[in-house]
Image (cartoon, rainbow, N blue to C red; front, side, top):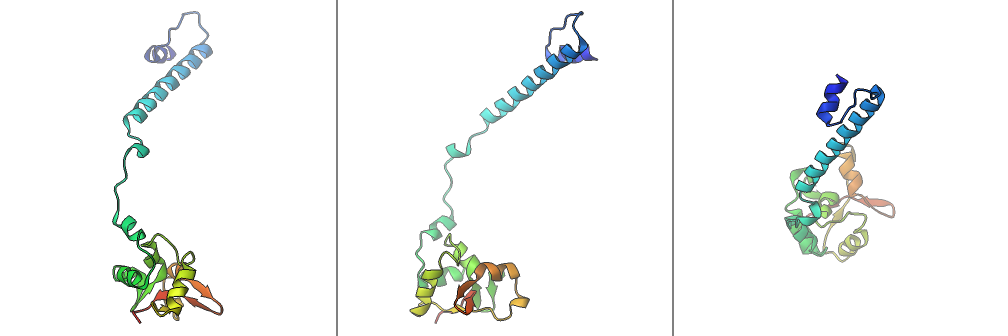
Length: 152
């Protein structure tokens, strides 16, 4: 059986060779063959860096500034899973802008204080998606905002 594998692997075996040496030579030859096949496959596959990425709608949204009108325009596009009645959770809304509520905290508070947007708190958090509530939270003193409310 070892002679058959050696022949298949292309290993020249002398009748006087030690079986362990033949087995080692077969293992090396088979490993070399497998590595060669892998390299051929990798050469055929285009690299990710050589393929130009297609622009997405999300990338064009990220170019928008965080303004009241832009937030409300994008809020209208958030699916039902990102809403609670007339409110929109901040996390899925701000994902559309490529940011998080915590990263955009100062800007959101500025817009809220200037009455361009209305930030709201989640009152019945036990009946809401806990992960969504946690990701949408913006702590401000003794209270926490979770939603963009309807236009003021």
